[in-house]
Length: 383
Image 1 (cartoon, rainbow, N blue to C red):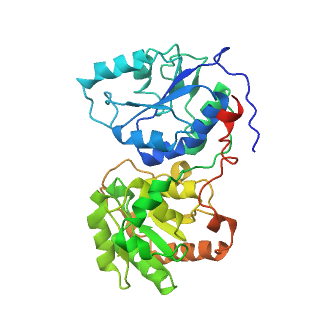
Image 2: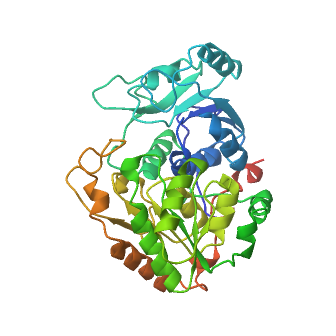
Image 3: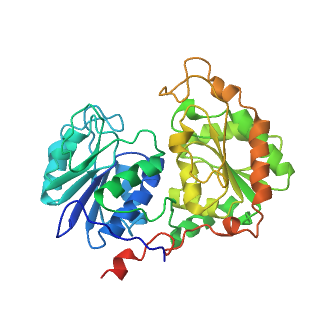
C-alpha cells in the first residue's frame, strides 16, 4: 500500500470528528476533488465527513462512501451561479448544519470571494478553505491563498497539504458497483457490445462554448469504425438531440445510447470501451477515474486547469485562439476554437493512443483503481 504519513494536523488534538466539505458543483468538479477527499480521509480516518453539494450529489456520496459519510443539500447562495438561491430553504439548511455540530468546515468550492461568508454561517468550531490575496481572509492560520496557477486536482491537494493531510496520489477514481453493470445489461443494444471492441463518442458539454461540432465528432467516429471498432454515442437526456445530430452526420453505423444510461451504467459502458472521444467535460474525468484511454477535445475551457493530468493516457487536442479560456456560455465571435479544429487532428490523436495502448497493456485492462493505490484501507487500518 502507498504510504501516506500523517503530518501534524493544523487543528490540534483531538483531531476533528465531524467535518463538512463545501463543494456545490457538478460531476467533473467533484471528481477533481476526489484526491483531496482521499487525503482528508487518510488524515482523519474516524471522522464523519459530510459533503455539502447540489441535489444530484447525494448519489456521489453513496458511490464514494469510502471517503464520505453524509450529504447536506446546498440551497444556493447570493453570488453563486450553480443554483438559484432558495430563500425559504436556507434557514432549514443552516439549522441542519448547526444540528450536525461540525468541528471543521472546509471550503473546497472556489477562491472564496463569494462563498467564505456562507462557510462561517455553518456554525463549525473551525473553518478552513481558500481566499484571494488582497481580499478578506477569515482566518490566516487556516485559510490558504487560492493557487490559481495549479491544475484543479492539485489546487485542492495543496489545501490538504497546508492543513496537514498529505496527498495519497493525484489520480482520480470512479468506483463501479454491481448494479452499474446490471443497469447496462438492461439496455438491449448494450448487450451485444464486446468489451475492448467499441469506442465511446460523447459530444455533449454543459455550455455550448465547450462543445466541438457534431459533424466533427461524426467524422472521427466514422474513422474509428473503419479501423474496426464499433461506435457508441453517449450523452444525457438533454444531450439526446446533439447525439442524434452526430448519428445523422455519420456514414457508418453507430449505437446511440444518449439519454438511456444512468451515471452508473454509463461508467460500466466506459469500463468496457477501448477509447473515449469527448469534450472537456465531466465524462472525461469519469474516464480518468476508470483508467480508460481518451482524447479530450478542448475548445473554450482551460486545459491547464481541467484536463486530466496523465497526458499520455488522456491527450488533449485544441486550436489555440487569443480569447481562450473564456467564460461565455455561447461564443459571441463564431466559436473559432471549435470550427478551426479539424477532425483529422483528433483522429490522429486517437490513433496514437490506440497504438501505444494495446489490449494487453495495463492501462487497457485496468478500469478501477485498486484500494491499495487509493490509500483506501486508511479507515479500517486505523481502527
